[in-house]
Amino acid sequence: MHGVWGNRWTFILAATGSAVGLGNIWKFPYITGENGGGAFVLVYLVCIALVGIPVMMAEVLIGRRGRMSPINSMRYVTREAGLHGAWTAIGWMGVVAGLMIMAFYSVVAGWALNYVLLAATGQLSSLSGAAAGELFGGFLGDTNRLLVFHSLFSLLTFAVVAAGVTRGLGMVARILMPFLFAVLLVLLVYGVVEGNFSAAFGFLFDFKFDKLSMSGVLVALGHAFFTLSLGMGAIMAYGAYMPEHANVSRTIITVGVLDTAVALIAGLAIFPVVFANPGMEPGSGPGLMFVSLPVAFGSMPAGEIFATLFFLLVAVAAWSSAVSLIEPGAAWLVETGKLKRAPATFLLTLVAWCGGVGCVLSNNWLGDNPDGLHIFESLDFLTSQIMLPLGGLFIAIFVGWLMRRAIVVSEMDAEEHPLFDIWLFIVRFVSPALVAVVMIASLYDKLV
Ligand code: PHE
Ligand code: NA
Image (cartoon, rainbow, N blue to C red; front, top):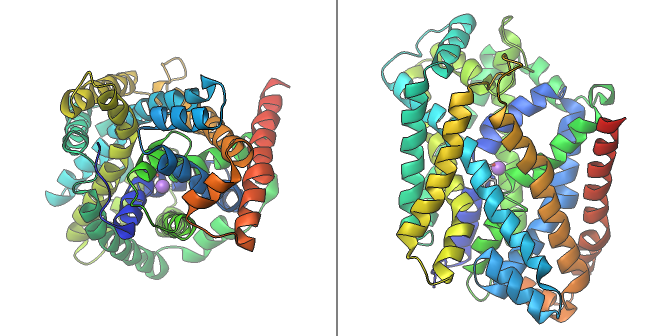
């Protein structure tokens, strides 16, 4: 009904397109900065290995089994297991979470689009750190401009989902990823030569646990879900379009490793600039990338070209992620038979767009107005730190404990293998326990 990926590689590319996005390049560096660096990075990496990748396999195989939107795939596997329909709520919560994320995601992607324009017209050339900060601050106060780019990005996302994601997405990712890696490597080299690379390296990989709070641990765990597009059905929907034979475990490990590599390289590109400029601070929040990187580009040979290319690639990476935020709901609406793909997609994009307008108008991204509505912060907190981890927890419990083993083995496309048993053990015990303990401990921490 929704199409099938051409082959295993198209699935890898589409899933990587979904995973690699603003989460890696924009969000990972700034939350790492806010949470003190090293220890946060270590906890994040542990969460990717012990929760993210194993649960990602579980989510994909529910999609493969159900072969429909997350809501209907959950309904199918629930019936098959002879269980109560309440499990379908995982699918519903995912659709809602997708729209909530899309609301702020499209605004930030709009920032990137604006920076493409600024870079291409030479307005990012030879900026000092202070001037870059002023430029960004001024932009955040320019409501009309924010709304224009937010709307443009929403429209671009609508176009792909309305046309059907299996059509051109693999191609986008195939071109995007090599270019993105290349430009990030240029920035990395710049950081080594011109920035304070040793300070940045130490900041990211010296594990100072006294700097990490319990709520920081939850941020790291939540980001493992966010960055892998996990716990809300995006990867489940993509799994549903997988061809008959494809080794799930190897495929998902590839996606997880690529995603992690992009995040770490982004960190290693941004922090050398931050530490070489006295006015910049690692913990300065969501503007970090938009304030630090223009300074690097500004003093680089052919910097304008690299800057234009970089922000364009960020926008395209965000685009191929945003598509998967809308897809679960769109696929479900199409399956009800009441709407065609285009109107269904339009409806969902419109809802998310309204949320984005709320983010823009509340205009409190840098938290400098304590009385303002914190719409962005609330959407981010509710999705990354509550809904996605809960979705992932229930997916792990479902696949680990309630699905028949024979079904799990066949949908993984794996024979009985010692590694299979290790994976199943992690999905049964380790991932659910980690998510539950971190969520409860940080709740306790907040209350006491
Ligand atoms: N994984 C995407 C990123 O890192 C964001 C995303 C989250 C996409 C959830 C889809 C679903 O930017
Ligand atoms: Na990501």
